[in-house]
Image (cartoon, rainbow, N blue to C red; front, side, top):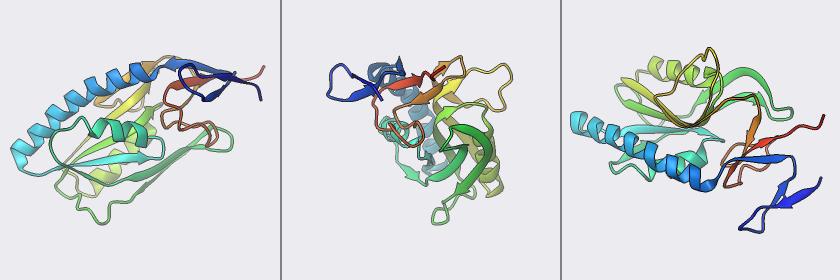
Amino acid sequence: MPYSNDTGSRRQIPENFTLQFSRDEIAKRVKEVGAEVDAWCSSVWADSRTDVVAIPVLRGGIFFFADLVRQISSSIEIAPVRAQTYDPATNTAMEPSVQVYAEGLPIKGRVVLVVDDVCDSGRTLEELEKALLARGAREVRTVVLLRRLLPRPTFVPCWVGLEYKGPEWFVGYGMDDSEHWRNLPDIYTIGRDA
């Protein structure tokens, strides 16, 4: 597979990757969205004197989650969830599989923030919201780094960092190409061979 150099580092980038969002664009939007989420978390604390339960969606959402929660000035509690909606071998869609790992953390009566990397159709976030409300969450809000613009989305997150129109596959900043390249600091789309 041919590679090209990532300017500014020694990283080798596959030639079929096209830069869509640079690390500087991502950082700017994380800071802006983080300020809005911070104001909301602060109001939850002021109203209830309880921390927001912040839930990163594994594995893709961990990069965005780590950067976002450092923008929040009030205390938060963390409980990860795992969701799978794509076959990692083929990058093709499948029915959402959601596993909530929050047994050690009380959800009932709590305010929850779900943090994910990308919202395509919204099925994963919709299933997560249902599962958390079924476990007794008082309120569930969602924030994603990247939302794919669709004519009829299933679910619309409360906060969105970046938007993209088109069917291309994303990679980098937590998103993967068949489990590869999650660690890229920028977001790319992947060109497929004809």
